[in-house]
Length: 267
Image (cartoon, rainbow, N blue to C red; front, side, top):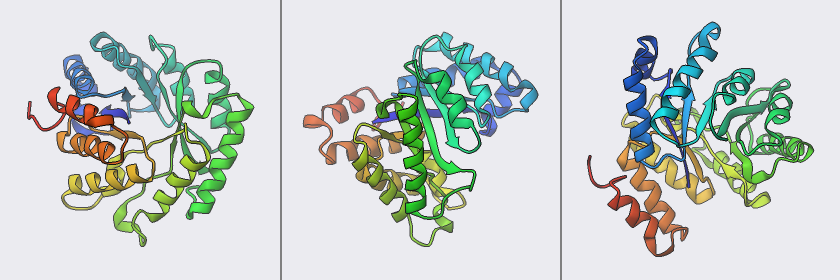
């Protein structure tokens, strides 16, 4: 189970306010709290105007690295911003993200191929977001051809099957779970990831929907999560589900996370 902490993102109003005010202490505290909550990567996404995105990314990365040694996920819709942001990182992290839109995957893979950087890949292309499981798996197949071309091992990839709003779906998450299951069947060592909160947009009591989705997605094979690690209820659900799926010998990870206060013990 891989946790990608989502809190340092300018799309979140409180974080956007801190970025605009250059409130380094606020960013530092977010980094420390997410690290303490068990994040395996700390996502850094500026979400500012293009003209200041890279300098803002450097400012954020420097703060995070001074606060914790947890690897960074450099996050931007601009693949070149991600590439430049890598240069500010002290160690390999997570490239977030590529897709088969335009030349994004080729540009990124040329840079990360001979490194230890991992990479998030979205299952969309120049045709947009595929509407069926088959179409998404076709994009996945093309993506894996690129991985083979650049000699990137599947274990370094985090495939995002594109989690969409539940309230606009006629079939719940059956298509997403089908895609997740098939991906893991074809490549057992690959990771499947996604922003858990995407599922609950425009719904009341969103945290409940997020938790329910996490359980179903994990059962299908999802093992990498972009989420708020400070949400103890969600984190507890993840550890409990991992144990119930037989992926936690003698519940040792569940017990250890509880003792560390990651869930079940309000800090």
